[in-house]
Length: 349
Ligand code: TXA
Ligand code: MG
Image (cartoon, rainbow, N blue to C red; front, side, top):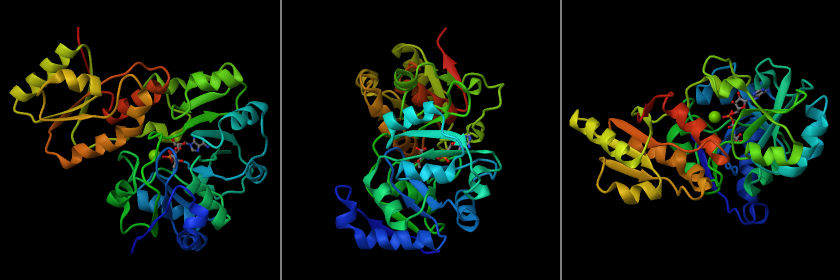
């Protein structure tokens, strides 16, 4: 399949790029799948109401069929066609964070394709905060089911080049709107329970949610590996580069000695660190990538997936990553790092 590519200006996608968006929207209306930028990561969109279109998403990504998709909308009014019951907490969260990196799990009306919900009686919905995503859906006149536009198991794409790397030849088109901003996926919150529960940490932090609705729970599966997660996608290994990743918990000297040990064993070592650590590591490791500053964790979120992918273009045998406190954006960053590492941690005693 030939993958069409359009470049779309973020500043005013409607005015500047109407012909490009019309072409992309027409493909979506013809049950094809098209990748598009959101503020979190690139999504792989298809008409959420069409079985045929949604099945193509699973085929292109190699995604397991039991992992449901998020439905993207442009207006709150679209919710009445999608969900059965809108609890007050959900309304409050929408008012505070939409458009934005927050996905709400709600009782499904059963109007979207059964492949979207993977047989669950709930549906996940979000309104992305990206002018190109909103304009594309507006022109197509469709709610779009969209997972991250990567091959299953790879890091999510934060640029059109990442999407191209994974899906060229497998999808109808890619709308290039530049690099995404947040860099990690949306926070998924289950609103079908008395107290809302975070199923996946993401772009909106627990602290931010609690400031709006009070107590917010966390799916126990996020902190214990013995529990089955309520968000089916959370059970799969994810975000992994080719070389194995190890999280290194300890001081700078411990990180240095861990690197030396691996090099003495004949390994080429990749280091995933902050600017602060990089400036103190000297020549340690074979490839050192700094993905942001410790003083502003949102910069780490923005660049993390790009850095994980960048190691694939190097010949490192092993990757050591520094770790972060699990509060604020640190919760989402550590969730993705732990998955990339398959929970392999080297601790200083
Ligand atoms: O930021 C994002 O959320 C990006 C952009 C493209 O919007 N999308 C994204 O989609 O990350 P995906 O498919 O990679 O992750 C969706 C997550 C999965 O963990 C899935 O299991 C969960 O949401 N999910 C979807 N529907 C659900 C439901 N009804 N109940 C519980 N979890 C659900
Ligand atoms: Mg994904």
